Length: 298
Length: 241
Image (cartoon, rainbow over the protein chains, first blue to last red):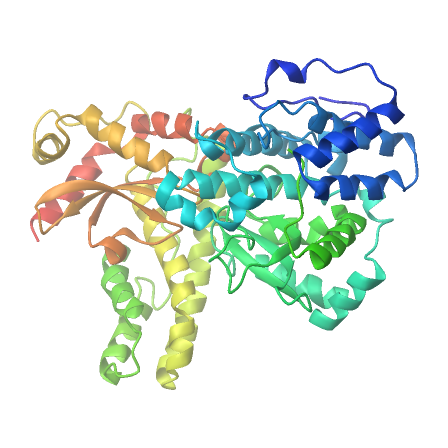
């Protein structure tokens, strides 16, 4: 179990040997090199968001977070778009008491890793965002694993990064643009949260699934969408139109069972305490501009 | 037994999807659904064993939460949905009848499935697969051996995506038994026509406390606590019509 601000060092089963050797560079050089590598390997989207972070404050925690994220992208093997489980930006216990440490550990190390391992099952890997769009079609060619586990990889990678420890989360807030959009679409933040919680209730989203706040195709409204199993609104055919999530909550039982058992509503209402609205605002700015899904690490 | 009351009525309710449906029929379906052993409300059935009886395969903690929280919630919500159904049918509000179908399926299915589940479980060592008789014959006819049947049902149950159930069921048309899975709480008989013989709950709540994410370990272990006598009784009853 990690005790410092460093992230848990967990690697997927498919991690190649090269992931262990890291060049001895200064942080500044590493940052520049990683930006360049990221741009090549993962696309300009990642470089865009890293650039935004580089302009922010340079606290030790932020540097460590950047480095952890960058290390993942540096260490990507020579095959482009290979999936790997991204390290969390915080230790497993960081989201206590709202999400317990054992849940975070198993959720990340077991469930997310299983999604990655099964996502392609030996077949060539597709860019993870591209996979989402065509996931339903791909099922007829490649079987259900591509939808269930390709979706699962994206969803979980998205999920980890929109959360932060409670004392940090409470200092975050939606950007003025996001706030305006929330008010336009739901009336107010409180009304959005109430609608979200209603959509996430066991009677509304039955069984396993996710609840999302998305930007619609026209880019002029936020929509609330529930999806079953590991589907997400980026997948053509899942919602009325392809939509771009900016916020999402896992309501599979594994996401809350150890602490909440059957009390899903309590888990959902507690979850707001760990939402990083700065990241959600970044997501919003990104999807509005690019009309594409938020890129994820790994 | 409550599942006999619910199944045909649920099937009727699930088929209430046409405004052209005879008013009398919908009323009968609703009345059937609303009738229950204890004067108009469904109840959580008692278990025939202690909460700890299925250890070490399923812990007392799991059994307690599974029975008193999950199953109880289905019963409570089923009763609430049936009250709403009564009101909707009485006022001839077809729109409301239809909008209740999801809740009826979730909660009615949840009640049926769990009732069947508790009954086909028993303490480890107290039930052996019968060495002769209807069940053995049916299993061998369809799968060749018990082990093959377990492999088939086990793999299907493990492979359910998200929440659902694995089932061994009787196909009245073919006279054979088969394995099947259903998502969420979709009940076997109204969904597939198969008569349920043996159910395995693979919702995460059924195994997470004891097995965490390792569903295969749970499914492989559950064979030790199956009540084969009950499975055979169900088969004999199903075959007799």
